[in-house]
Image (cartoon, rainbow, N blue to C red; front, side, top):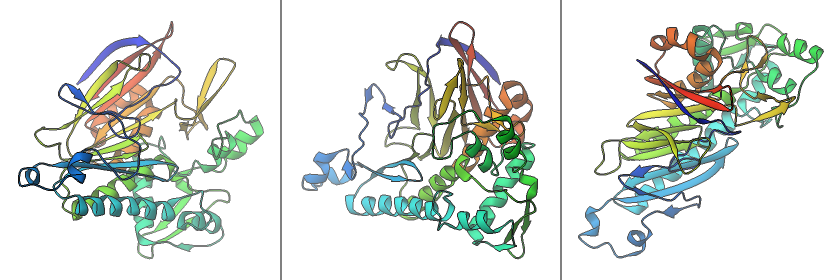
Length: 365
């Protein structure tokens, strides 16, 4: 199903707001304020008051945040006993930190950095978890015909988005970077769990998908602790809604109007689903009135033009984190034909229009 809706004039940023970080969630007519503190109990009166018989039957809400993987992870949970709820959230955030230590390309001692240093010189034995995750990433590369590619590390550096806010590379720099990317240069040995790069200069950058994986792992920890209702946010770019709030059928997540922060562009309802967003507003620079964002088309070696943002609803964070990039790169027309090929249940595009206007296009399976 495809619907197209013309919204408001465009602005420099598109913001997705959920109740957690960079997001807001509404329950009926009442909107809860965003709270960025650590170890904050939203119903603080319940936490500090004696647990009476009546209070024991009422769910409490608990939130905690932590900086990891270059963003703020925030977890909100409903439960009936503060101590196990707090332990569950701490365990989930610890799991995010573990994934960061494994998959960061900024940390020199991470397993991923070791692969980047050694895999072009020799076959590298890889941690089984990381190997399986990389194999999954390469599956998305094959199925998207290269629209998603975790070997874009050299491109990100050439365009100045690795530890920076971007710059225009020279033609020679761009040509050299394009010569050092390509998922087909990654050789996997499933039996031995080894990786080899058949070309010097190839390196992994999991920034386009690792946060979604960390969200999924955090949700798995919450489930093991018996949590049935929670929101997990990775810096606002990927969020997973576990269950629903007490008395509600789903979490209502509002995507904010990019012009008027007091208005909402659209609302999505999530239950046991992920929402992931890729947008040109996250990292970009402008040169001669043209915006160049960090979202690369690996096939051209250049930032994608003609799309402000793409939001994807999926069953898990990994597929959402991959597919928001895939659909962003492919654009609306090519995405129509591939929607049923992937696991996304809905894709929302925000596209620029002449006269400082933009439109929203929603596609559903």
